[in-house]
Amino acid sequence: MKGRMTPWMILATVGLLVLSALFVPLPVALSAPQARTIEIHARQFAYEPATLVVQRGDTITLHLESLDAVHGLFVDGYDVNIQAEPGKSAQVTFIADQGGKFKLRCSIPCGSLHPFMIGELIVEPNEGLVRALAATLIVTLGAVVWFWRV
Ligand SMILES: [Cu+2]
Image (cartoon, rainbow, N blue to C red; front, top):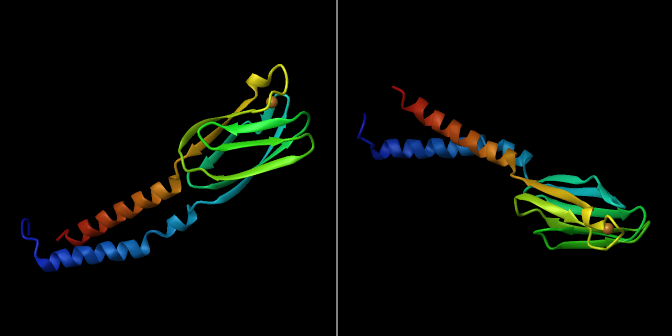
């Protein structure tokens, strides 16, 4: 059968691809980008939590609340910069469209250790999506191999 791809075989292969595309991508729905709200408390001289982990593509709303002085929150690499007065909160919404690690910095001089008031935003690749695509590919190849095994 090698070297003899008849139009009928090509049609059948395409049919298998379409069929597997219909049945396999269910996990994609589970890994769709989410809207997430994260509460951050700021005080001299730290953020709580100091590390934020999100998935790429998520829509992130940050609620910044200051527990003492006026603090800011600036995210390196993103156009995000908010300030919160003591006892008040500020918020910003953005889409985590760049993967990687980004420093959070206080953008308001708030005291002696202000330069050390940092945190981190970690934007992870959307693993669920990657896995779903890989699963689709493997199942599709498996189906094709199974179909032509005789
Ligand atoms: Cu500060």
